Each structure stands twice: as C-alpha cells, then as structure tokens.
Image (cartoon, rainbow, N blue to C red; front, side, top):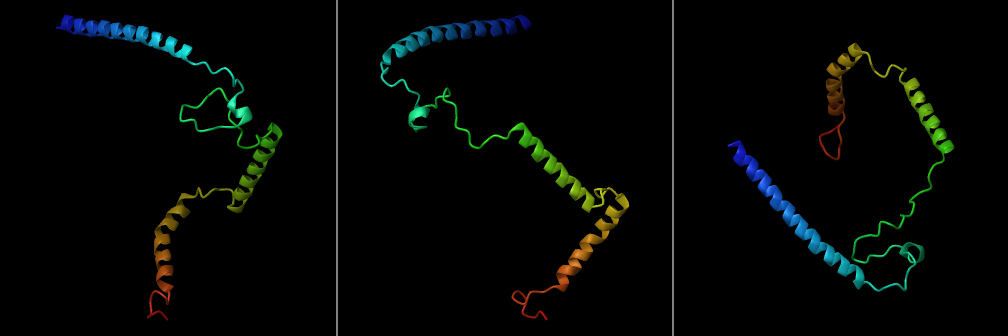
Length: 135
C-alpha cells in the first residue's frame, strides 16, 4: 500500500514538473516577443521628476522613490522628545502617589462600593427635560 502511495506522489510530481517546464518555455518566448514590441525611447525622464504620479491604469513603478510625507526627526530631536515623554510620565506617577494603584485591599473595597455609589448618584440626579415629575 505504501508503494502505491509513493508511485502516485512521484508520478504526479513528474507531471507537474513537465507542465511547469512547458509553461516556462512558452512564457519565455512570449516574454521575449513582448520585450521587442516596445519602441518608446523618446521619453527617458522618470515620471516622478517631471509630472508626479499619474493614474495610468497599470501597476505602479516601484523604482520611483515615494515622496516623504513629513520631515524626519534628527537623533537629537528624538532624544529630546523621549526625555519630554519620560518627564511627563514621572509627573503623572507623582500625582497618583507613585504606587500606581497596586494596593489590592483598596482596590477590592473600591470594587465592592463603586457600583452602588455610582448608581445612587445617577438616581438622585434627574433631568426635567426627560422626567416632568422631577423636582
């Protein structure tokens, strides 16, 4: 049974190789004929230098470098921005006491009472536009 499986795999692989070789030969002649068909040598200036990108209905030319969207940061500017961000981070940690809310007992008690407290706040406030019986 294993021999039959092996014959099937190898015979189909040979068939695939034959088809691929035939397509390569046929495709090579088509590519060679297609290369000779182009005779436009008058305009040799790249499109991006003169006119910019245009929708030609064909695939883009990847040899034309894209325009830069924004000015790139220098290494000094990068270091300055990172220092500013770290300073802002330290300021935020200083406001919260620097612990970052890592006390589990305080968090558990907050979790038990927070929902009820918020619901009481919502129920005590009323909007006369929504509830005409509101005092």
